[in-house]
Image (cartoon, rainbow over all chains, first blue to last red; front, top):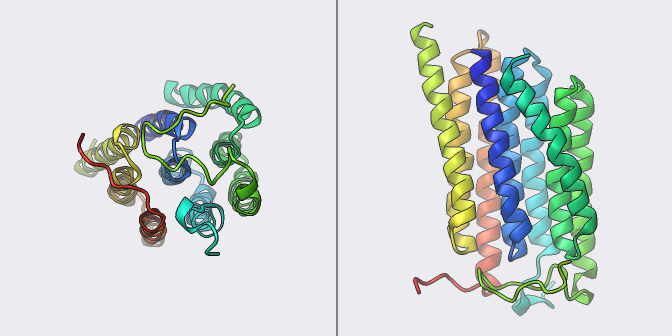
Length: 91
Length: 102
Length: 100
């Protein structure tokens, strides 16, 4: 079973690298941020698989932190960094 | 150590320097921040593979999460003065190409 | 391989497929709203299937509960994030994509 876990983890890592194309190409900041959030979720899945394959329960805590911070960065992005043209002076 | 684990490590080790180079060389500030967040996540996976889950925890929390949020906040404050930064390029696909990309 | 292993394998492969579909949608769809749609599929369904597959393998119900709670946290943050981004994009006047 460990081979299956590692194989799926490798496949998910390839997915992250594929999604990197969207971060590089943009075009809007929201697109890059969406890709970053997908990386966070995929990272959670990879960590859960690795925790099972390597028999390292501590990795589940790392996955928990990944899940928390994916939300945090998106909230920071929407509230702070993203100012669409029509409401630049609202804040 | 089977072939999937080896492929995982080689892929991570090959991509991370490339990603670091992209973070440092891009002109678009927002793109650099988004790439930095992705870089932090992948770096955290590297610490996991090096059997250091505590360092991975710190890297995910501080490196990717908090620094990312702080950089985004900073970008929101300086963004209005920077035409290549966060406030530009709102068009969907097919908008103006980023001419300052080197 | 017993029946539990086969079920786990199926769940894991289905989850990986949903992640792949989400990534592909992120690359191929034309604007932010469409990409949001693809992304939430990968987040919720893909991670959910992988979590269920792994829950069948752990021998301790506390660990199974922990996996379930991790999935719930991701569900919560991903739903919040999708709503925030879609709301900000709509209010900021990001145009909806029309079939050309």
